[in-house]
Image (cartoon, rainbow, N blue to C red; front, side):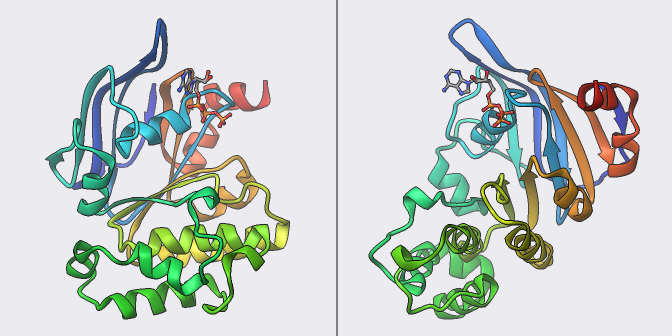
Length: 244
Ligand SMILES: Nc1ncnc2c1ncn2[C@@H]1O[C@H](COP(=O)(O)OP(=O)(O)OP(=O)(O)O)[C@@H](O)[C@H]1O
């Protein structure tokens, strides 16, 4: 790995020796990395590099084959998804998990409902929902089934926000959106990062590179570059992977 990072202090999340195999195929092949608090960090890599698998390990959806994961200095390696979420490790809800017959506001209320959310945010559930609603730019009374695809993607991110995360994992939030909707989501992500750290997987580099503080490139289950955006994009190996 070529390390072009600036020294980072105080990790929000840190992994050591992380590996994940499905049967005999090792998809994550030994990742050591940490992400500081309050950073907008972009993760890129070719299809099949292991980006989504990496997120699934971070949030507890998959158990690692080896290695250790620390979130806010606590060992969460074997902690279930819900418990990590209660600690403040958020992941956007998928459209499939939105309640289509309920209103936008009711969906946000469900996301904000856990007592830990109020404790973490220091705000009432209603305030958290109002703020997530403003963030979404949506009419709270509309039923989710009447929203466009782009609006539902925005609600997905707002649902993540309504859990008052300390770190939010966003997996391809721009996918399937128009150019205008991508711009809106990018603006929202920048706003969001005032109160939470963001780890973002995104294929649309034109939009995503503009909003990232730092960048990590995964390739064949390993980190091949990590650090400031310009330095990583100038890295000869990264250019080779992307430009051939
Ligand atoms: N549950 C699973 N069982 C078996 N193989 C899996 C599983 N999940 C992922 N893989 C394999 O792991 C590799 C990495 O997949 P992953 O989805 O993490 O890559 P990615 O970098 O997110 O790709 P993309 O950019 O296409 O979304 C792929 O070869 C994929 O087929």
